[in-house]
Image (tube, rainbow, N blue to C red; front, side, top):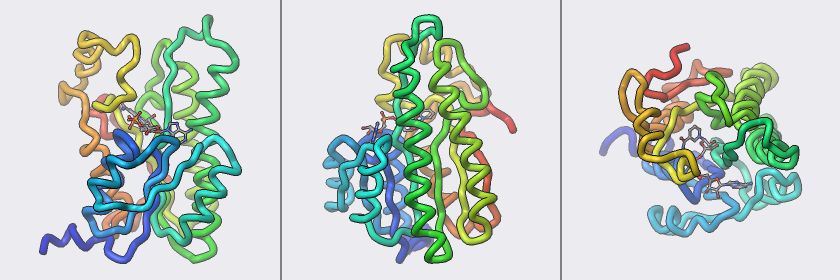
Length: 242
Ligand SMILES: NC(=O)c1ccc[n+]([C@@H]2O[C@H](COP(=O)([O-])OP(=O)(O)OC[C@H]3O[C@@H](n4cnc5c(N)ncnc54)[C@H](O)[C@@H]3O)[C@@H](O)[C@H]2O)c1
């Protein structure tokens, strides 16, 4: 048997944003490494569940405190939590409404806070756990017309560092900050074929696949990442070099 198929055997994982893209790929990667995976999303996770022979699903809105508390109550004890739920609104800041700004922050940053809080409550009580937050290379690089998104993702990187210090040594808290990755998140106005070609102008000259981000997530959940906490790793084709 391939050792990677048992690397996370006996571990219970929960992944938000598991209906699509990076969350779906992360759920599949953790399951492929032997973890029992619970799928959480505001959307139906049926397609992901089908690919996992019927994993449990929980409907959640990560921006709502009561919804997140309910998710953790249903899920029970967890060894691994990945927060991949996120959204993106593109807008020049001079045209952006305060409501759109708040919505970005509510889903991407408050959602990370609420999911982290629920995860860490259980993990600190049990004395171990791996929490993995998903930011973006744009939280480091910045980008015109993505100000709220960039701010939310920079916040997730700061949250990771603070929580890693607050919960060490029991819980490992890390962050994956992907570069552009081929998921439905990219299906917004400006993301034309020309845009994608421009995005591919990183050292590796292409955008990433969800599986390439998920492999970083699965590694951070694995015994091999035992000396990692508070880190942000950037699978971005070399666009970000820390
Ligand atoms: N695709 C990229 O290029 C890219 C790059 C960097 C970072 N990211 C980040 O990766 C994460 C996953 O994005 P993706 O590319 O897989 O996008 P996606 O649109 O394929 O998946 C996002 C998932 O989050 C869910 N979601 C959105 N709001 C939610 C909420 N309030 N509560 C619960 N679930 C919610 C959606 O239903 C969807 O299933 C996001 O945090 C995103 O910001 C993506």
